[in-house]
Image (cartoon, rainbow, N blue to C red; front, side, top):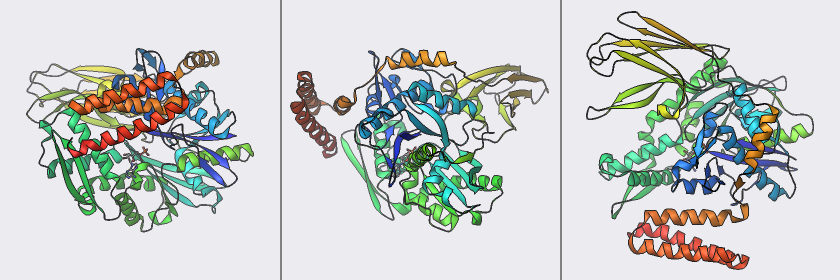
Length: 567
Ligand code: AMP
C-alpha cells in the first residue's frame, strides 16, 4: 500500500486507493483535515493538528504554523527550548498521518507519494523527501499539487492536448497552474501566483464590514476582542452561499453585537480582491501562450474556493462552470493516492514540472509610516516575489526615513512574512547618503536572481551615483544518510501524543482556553468541570473516561454557546 499525502501549508491529508477509487483516511479525531500545526511542551510531548491549534491559544511561542514556507531553508523554530527545522516539523505531521493510516487500514505502511507545489525547486523537494524519511516513510515519488488535482479529475485519461487550469486559493496564497496532457506526460505549462492573497483576506473584509456596521473603532479595542471578531468573521464567511444573508455576532465588552450582511454587499466589498485574482490567471495564460478559450476545464483547489462569490467569479471569467464534483480540500491528496496506486502497478504518471522559478520571496527591510506620523521599523518589502520565473532582475527605489540620515543599510532577506524578523537574513549592504531631510535622498536596489540560484544585489545612491554590489550563493541544505539516521533517532525519541488520548487532550486544552476567556461564575464552573474530568482521567477506567468525555464535551459546547447569551 502506497499512501497519497497532501502536506499542505494550512492543512494536511492522507488518502489511499481502493477498488472504487481513492479515499481520504480520517485522522484520530475522525476528521479528514489535520491542521499543519505542531506544538511541543516542556516534557518533549509533541502535539499535532487541531490539538496543537487549541494549544496555541495558551502557548503561542511553543507552537509552529505555516512552516512549509521555509521548507529547504535553515530557518529554525524554537519550541519549548528546542530547535526544529521545517523538515523536522513536517516529519511530525507525516508521522501522525502515517499512524492514522496504519490504524485505519490495520496494516503497517512504509511508502507514500507526497505532493509539493509545482514551483518547489530541487532543494525544497529534497527537504520534503527527507521529512518523509524522518517520519519513517519511503518517498520515492513526489507529485506536484496541480498535477495531483488534475489527475483526480482524470486529466491523464483525457485526449492529447487537453488543458486544465488549476485554480488553487488557500488560506494565504493563490496559485494558478496550467497543465496539458502531451504524449501521455502531464506537463505543467505555467505557474503564476500571489503569495499575499487568500481566504484570510476575504475574512479581513468581513471583519471590517462588521466593525463599520457596529460603529466600532479598531484602535479602541483590545487584541483579544479583535481576535475574537476575526474568528467570528471566519465562521460567518463560511455561511455565505448563493445569495444568503448572514448574521454575524461577536461579543464586545459585555455586549453581544450583531449585524446582517447580504452576499451582494459582501461581494461588492470584495471587488478589489476578486480583481486581484485575475492577474495571475492572465499571467499564466500569457506564459503558456494559451488563450482562455483553449482551457478545457477549470479545477478548483483549496478551502477558499468553496466561497460562492469565488465560484461566481470563476464562472463569469471563464464563461463556464468550474468542475466542483470533488471536495477542493481533498483533490490533491486523492490525486497523490492515484499516483501511489499507479506506481504500484508500475505505470506511474510522468510529469514535467517547472522548477526554474525563484523559490522564495526576496526582499529587504523597510520602515513604514503609520497613521499619526510615527514610523514603524521591521517591515518586509518584497522585491522578487516567490514563484517568479528566473532569470529575473527587479529594481525598487527606497527613500531615507529620517532627517540627516547618513547611511542606508539594505538588509537582504528571504521569506514570506510581513515582518523582517521572521524572514531569513542572507546579507546586508550599507551605502553613505548625503545628509538631507527625510525622503529627499533615495537609493535604487536591484536584485538579480539567475538560473544557478545566485542572487546579486546592487545598491545605487540616486544623487551621487555611488554603487555597492554583493553576490550571494544559494543556501542549500544537504544531509548525509548518517545525518538523517541520527536525526531520525533524535526525533523518534520525542513522543507524539498518544492517539487514544487525543480527544481528551483536545478537550482539556479547549477547557483551558474557555477558562481564560471567561470570568466570574462561568470561570469557576469551568475550573470545577476541568478538575472533575482530570480526576476521571487519572483513574484510568475506560468506560468511565468515555462517559466523562462526552459529558465534558457537552459542557464545553454549552459554555461556548452561553458566551452568546450574555452570561
Ligand atoms: P486551505 O489552505 O486550502 O486549507 O484553505 C483555507 C482557507 O479556506 C481559509 O481561508 C478558510 O477560511 C477557507 N475556507 C475553508 N472552508 C471554507 C468554506 N466552507 N467557505 C469559505 N471559505 C472556506
